[in-house]
Image (cartoon, rainbow, N blue to C red; front, side, top):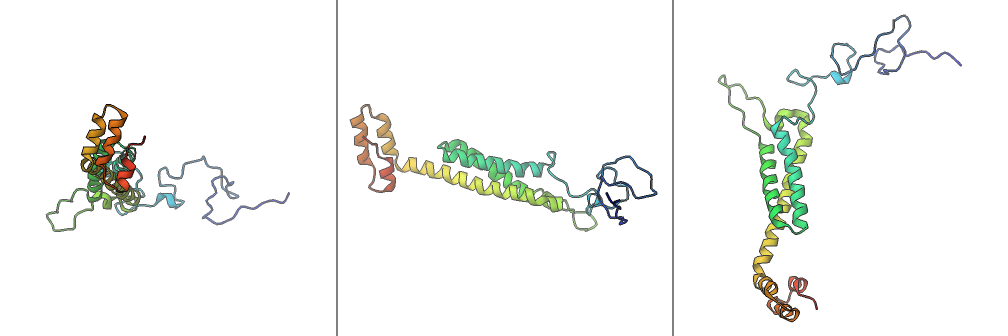
Length: 197
């Protein structure tokens, strides 16, 4: 088996490769550890504030939490609207709308006394990490709007055909329930709501 030579390039990033000839073995260290190992890999990049690279999901950040809450509440509100529970869908849709708007807006930064531009707040303060949070907030707004639309259409349908629903609920026999069909108009919605024999 021929002897394989290690590349002499200092940019070799293989953590399992043997050290170059003449250099002693070193104990393993994680790459994203201290940042003072001097190998200059991409994990040690700094952001504009001098901290580590862009942050991921931070549950202590209220703006990120609200973006996620908006997505979850909007999605569940939409499902409750589809499955015929409009009151819960309306509640979750309203909450998702509030959380989504507050996540996108964030709190305005106080102006500094020197007239310098204020530091960005809200999702803009996250920099590149704001993209998934912004997507979650916008998706929450869309699903919240659909959930509220479904809830209002369900309530509007119940108000428009209130006489039919009251007659059907008060009917004691099947023939009395069938007579309630005369209260429905001759349209597609009326045909769907008709009591079948």
